[in-house]
Image (cartoon, rainbow, N blue to C red; front, side):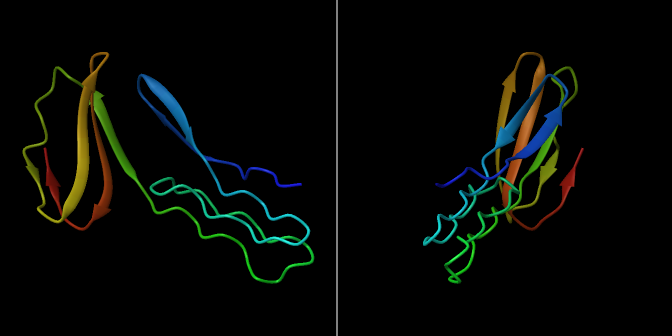
Length: 103
């Protein structure tokens, strides 16, 4: 049978969450890759299949703080991110790129 790999967990003020890891391979199957932007590991290959395990998920950086503070003043043009405001917090999720941020 195929089992789901353990997820990468995160814990930030006001909430927690888990991202899914890759599925393990069956006796004759390869493991699957982890979710993108999860930081999770890929599934291992089945015991009779040497085709390899799945790829690990790409990383993510999460910045969460009280919405009473100002927005991030500068976000480098090379960064891919989303910003949400909910439950008294601002949350920035950076999923790709290289750059500098300034508060």
